[in-house]
Image (cartoon, rainbow, N blue to C red; front, side, top):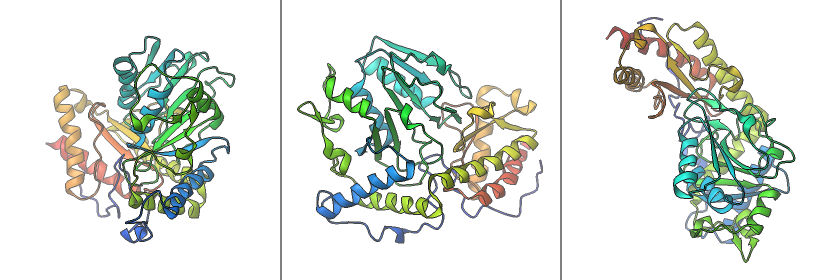
Amino acid sequence: MTGNRPAVRPARPFFSSGPCAKRPGWTPDALNGALLGRSHRSKPGKAKLKDAIERTRALLGVPADYRIGIVPASDTGAVEMAMWSMLGARPVDMFAWESFGEDWVTDVAKQLKLKDAILHKAPYGQLPDLTKANPEHDAVFLWNGTTSGVRVPDGNWIAADRKGLTICDATSAAFAMDLPWDKLDVTTFSWQKVLGGEAAHGMLILSPRAVERLETYTPDRPLPKIFRMTKGGKLNEGIFVGETINTPSMLALEDYLDALGWAEKIGGLKALIARSTANLAVLDRFVRESEWAAFLAEDSHVRSNTSVCLKIVDPWFAKLEAEAQADAAKKIASLLEKEGVALDLGSYRSAPPGLRIWCGATVEKADLEALVPWLDWAWAQVKAG
């Protein structure tokens, strides 16, 4: 660790965990093909929306009999649509180990008021016991905890012959981690995460089992228009071929298509995963050599390769009161932002004090390598007072 200001700065200081960095080489010219001033229900409008769906399917390897829809309100909207439309038919296991998982628990317990909800919880940096998932129950969980840096390592804990549905919030995992589609009945993500697209649009992926639930179960609660996926007891197939429930942004759509094109060009899903994994390796080397920083997720088997969370383990820091610890962590992020080295690096407001560094595929490895010495520099400034 040194107090000397490093000579090299990241070329792109964008390490936010959402909205995330745009793809390398992005400029506003990427949006020149946007269908502006036209209806999204026009032939070319629906064609662009369907193209986004089918290219998503191809890139992620989603089975042909799964439906993919573009829905309102980002990943949050997609998760809410699934929970409000499908939960209640069976007891539900809720797995939570960070803030967004806690949000879904709140919805189920306080808004839907489901009496047969079972909470499986773990503190930041750890996973709950996933083997407690009852195959007779539905299950709601994140694949990657964006605010804790902890991910589900695999789908082995999900029964192949389960009776319940699995509802997976995969917003910071899709395009960066292998997802076992045969184990996932509802999968959601948003454009602004791993591919660095624009906000406000969600993706909802349904297995045939999820479609069956929609067509055979009617919840005893009113559903707002943007949550309704059936008509006359049958799935509204239009949603899954580009006929969106409400008006999407064709400018944001063009940006997503551009991001998909970049991903296809560099080698598809395997290349995206490799880039995120190589980025994580940069921080892994830093942590192994650091005297003051460690991973919040101590178990490498469950450590995220997108939203990487660091905690401060220096003895000086440990002696501080909780408020002072939070202030010290914020000062590190503020110093780096002031220097134009790293933007939006602070840990999530409800997470332990530390740093959160996005390592998804749109971040360049060279920028992370340039960032690392600055982390030591900022820590030295804060510790010196």
